[in-house]
Length: 112
Length: 114
Image 1 (spheres, one colour):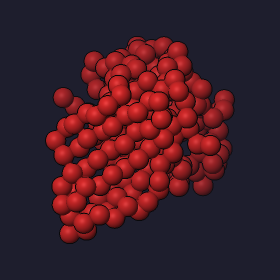
Image 2 (cartoon, rainbow over the protein chains, first blue to last red; image 1 turned 135 degrees about the vertical axis):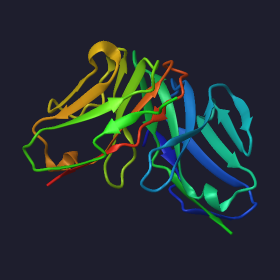
Image 3 (tube, helix red, strand yellow; image 1 turned 60 degrees about the vertical axis):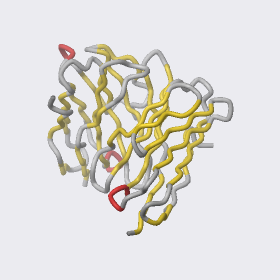
Image 4 (cartoon, rainbow over the protein chains, first blue to last red; image 1 turned 180 degrees about the horizontal axis):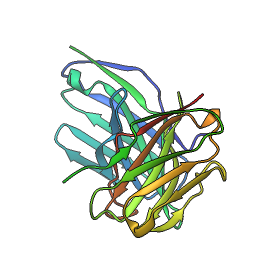
């Protein structure tokens, strides 16, 4: 079992729709959770961070965390073609240092 | 505020040669991380510095890899001798704080070992 699992996609949604991206993680000691967006050939760009159970909203983005179910999700409202990218889920564990473990990413296509 | 910078952007070397990658974190960020992404795989953690101290180097593949952060500012990652499987994109990231700190990535160095 991978430490951080994501559906590789591609996930295709029409412009203006809600895109829902999901992630599960295996280490119950994970303490902080992040969503990154990565365009082809570029470096990951931080979108959202979430640390406690519940929802966190920032503009068109909402991150949801359920530690009991070891589940993190990202909702993108009013999806735009410019949102087309790979979305990476990342979890951080305290190892004495801070190790961040990435999922393989979900490719999102927003059709105009 | 300048972002994380990495040098070089690309490097092509032959198997057995040595390569040194450099990362300059965002000013004031004590935490510095190295990651690697090989073709088709997820981004893998290599190690974490706080200032000049290695906090977690559990992701370093083997002893051909050496990371340093003298003076707690920029960091270097040396691969010696390079092998074919070392090819990939090496990312550096930095953050102000550790566990909850938001990491900002540099543009990466694409390393090709032939």
